[in-house]
Every structure is written in structure tokens, then in C-alpha cells.
Image (cartoon, rainbow, N blue to C red; front, side, top):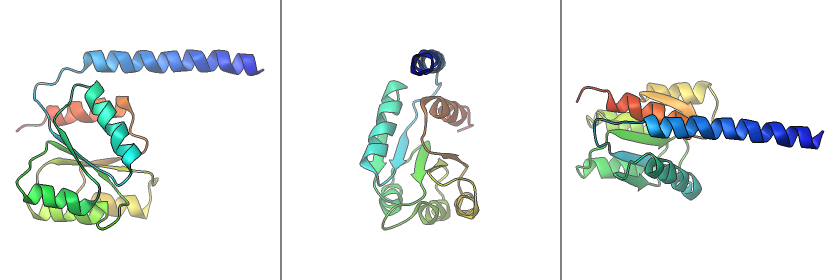
Length: 154
């Protein structure tokens, strides 16, 4: 039985890899996008960095808390996309998102959270997110997000 599962796992993994290769090869952005990664987990930030670099996005910055994200935007930094975690120390994602919107930040803010749909994610959306996705953020999901951001009128 184990051999059968290993065989199918290999097929599924190869199919997923094939989809990812096609998505990466098919990603043709019209604009050079800038991204802010906001997450307190170093592994998550490293994962997002790898995904962005794999997709040819090299213009990105990182913040470990919502407060750092707010500070970056207050200092004049402008981002096309902000990937915002829900739960962080100092300032959580909803509070940071609300402050960014009150400051007039028009970046696409995409919530990325380990929390499934419920009151917490609804409150996150209500704080001013454009949309949200449940972790883990995959390459294919990020491709879709980047295409949507790239197609917005500037």
C-alpha cells in the first residue's frame, strides 16, 4: 500500500510542479511592482521572499509588525502590494490596515492568515483589506494576486 501512495504522491507532486512552472513562465507583468511583507515570523517572511524572487519581484521590503509597516508608509515608502499578517506583536494586522487606510495608503492590502473564515477574518476584512487568503501563501495564489495588482489602473 505504501508503494501505491508513494507512486500517486509523486504524480501529484509532479502535476503541482508542472502547474507552478506554467504559472511562473506565464507571468508577464506590465509594471515593476513593489511589495511590503508584514509578518512577525522569520520563516514566513523568508518563504514570501523566495516566492517573490522566483517570480521576478525584487523590489520588496519587510516589516515584523504592523507598527513597522505603518512607520514605513509614514516615511514615504509606497508599495503596490502589502501582504499583511493578522496576528503580530506590537500592532496586529487589522489595526495596522485601518491606520494605513486612514493615512490614505491606496496599496492593495492582502491579508494572509492562519485563521479560517470567522469573526476574526471578517474584522480583518472590515479594517480595509482588499482581500485575504488562508496560509500558506502558495506560488500559484501569489501569481494570481500579482496579476490582479498589475492589472489595476494606476
